[in-house]
Figure: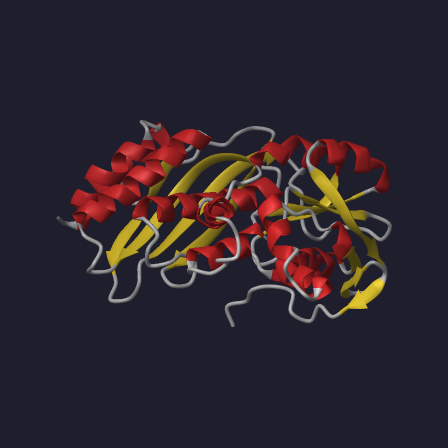
Length: 319
């Protein structure tokens, strides 16, 4: 089938009748203004063999693509609104796989209350590659930036850390020492992250700066420090961990090094934020753990029970 047949059959239904999508029959969408709000725009891409594995289903690939973008909006305290999609199909992705990809995307668009406003489909000799642009609304001037942390702030992280990185290992056939239920739970964390859209109110009320945890907690916290011109001190004994991650950690001979690995592994899609000390109780109630502080200086330093720890590797990079 032609590119335009694919768009009409697979993706036009995902506009869900939104008038601004123009039925996906034009080269652009028309987005009306929303008085009193800023439009937040983010874009992430995923590539086969880098962001997902050969055995991952097309539906899960599409859902992960959407969710990693929504994670960026979550960290900015934005309300998700709509998406644009671009997909480069390799020759081995046939009609059935494309239908499965579209079905997975449709499932999550409906779950998160979003519409598809447009995009592009092309062919490629390389691996499956897909890019998604996500749009969200936030009250004018209230988007939570990376560059606004201040010395004296405390550092917080939502949920738990390390499950995404271990989930990748489990999906690659590793972690045989863990129970099958723990491995399945970790693989789900890797393949289908949960964007922390539930944290929007807490971030708007209390965060002075924030970022999503995609490349690794230490790396993404470091992005806040670099953008804000401040240093960060992290206590790795405070790292919040899920039961499967604790089971893995209990078997590691070097606890400090293992915690550094967990804090730099990536794929957790939680939110790291800075906030004033008096916000600690409210953020704890919202599901955040206090893990460090913002100080004068630069860079990220870490300790484990008061002892300095080497954190030269802070997370994933593509270079």
